[in-house]
Length: 461
Image 1 (tube, rainbow, N blue to C red):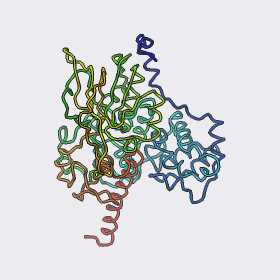
Image 2: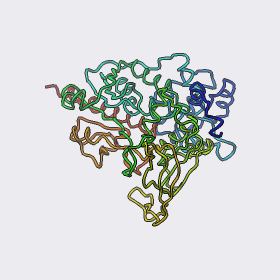
Image 3: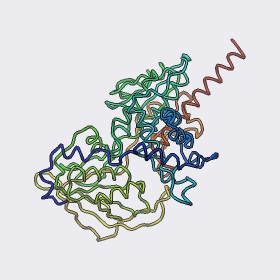
């Protein structure tokens, strides 16, 4: 699509570009696919799912017409299972482990999971009820996948739970950070509503450490779950970052998720810096906003790229160009302070860094300029170090250290899960992993108080 052909795109047409790309299965397609499943006894797909969803069970319920039971089976193990049906790298997880890979093709587990949860959403089902109150109060800081998962489980165990969320709406990454054409906001909002129906209180627009103090939380609650995720995209540290036309990828995607679609990208040239999933989102959003050309620059090679394979393929299908071994040196502006280009330098790979990826070093004298109208920064996110230190928790560069089984921090009263404990180069920062960590933190808190209560019964004061 050339710039000349798209100059007259209306906002209504742009809105259509952000509608969900993948269609759901029809009733007939879902039934046929469900009946292909072998319903393995010791199912490798279930073992490959970080949240341990009983995949044969939920698929068999689809085959028998029990869609409510299917949705409950999914959401019982994964409180954000509707979102995960759309964004999980299923080819690397459950579908990648399917025994049918060796003979035909794997069961479309992700699509079947979406089919069951979409049915529950469309039919406005309430899947779970809160447990008998146990008199204990828990604060959850952050209403993203990890926080929602912890809160739902704690409510199921009978705890009085309050979520403190800095944004206007809960849901975190699922609500604001994953592009609408992959994950519409209504899916995340339904998952949030399911948690609220468990009598969980959600305090939005509330920044812990500012709107409510750390000391207040420690005084008012029996335990705290820290699930605040990560913060904003850091600066590149190069000249020209303050020019008109330089964007933070997180805020850029968030704007498109909340309906703030700009016509400023129509026919323009866009450069995205970084090669993670957020960089892919920034690039594909630019295409849907009418950009004539979109390039992703990455200082290393495709082998070191952190984006999922399916995200990479999706971007290529959208016409996004990838420039490997290319790093930005400075952003160039015109006399009015608007971006007109980016000076880059070619890179070469050297010895591996601490995370196992090879170091990238500039090639002397290899500088060149790429003309561009906009630059989107997508080089990871900063940490909530100030908040972590207000709690006095042990951390390494903003990565909270926890017991790997209980997710308890250096303060026995505080547990942590999600991106706030995710270390560079250690595992996968997936939505489904965050959900599992939230579940495990909640279970550990439940065990802790159950043990205390059992001891009190055995040894009354």
